[in-house]
Length: 206
Image 1 (spheres, rainbow, N blue to C red):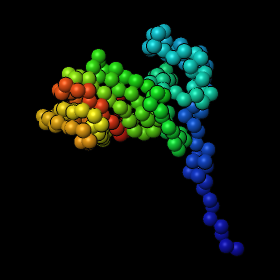
Image 2: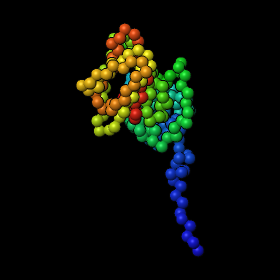
Image 3: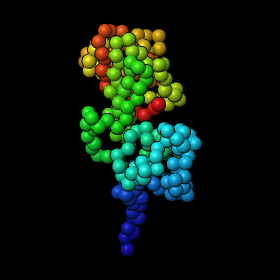
Image 4: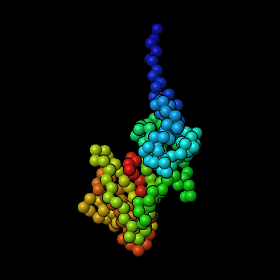
């Protein structure tokens, strides 16, 4: 009798039953023997009572409510895991529309520079809309050297001065630049008009 090869379905099954992000959060919490209250308490210890996620917010996230990227990071800190571990084997959204008035998160660098997240928290990359008012400048940034990080910037409006290591580049409307973000870099707006840019970091890094 002809021997029938043994079928190993593990990869197919894991893909078929890959968890959603909120399901993965709940599973990790339960595997650690923690309650939602425990995670909430850990968050307060790390971030303080004002900046920690509320108990109700944690409940809503575990029920599938769309969560801000900063909330996902805070949950990782409370659980003591990396973002990479959280999204590992997690089913990514096939599509997600993020409306202008429904941005998932916003960050303020200073009074003249701010950014809003325009990508889904479960994606491997980070997309942002970066705005620099006249005279605005960012702090020096540098991704870890032991990994390969890429950054891409496209000027939507105004002018952007990019300082990369010892080099300086002036980008005008519709200009773009891409580089290894392990190079020390910062951006500034030396013009008299607002500058708006689209920025992508792959993989995510803060």
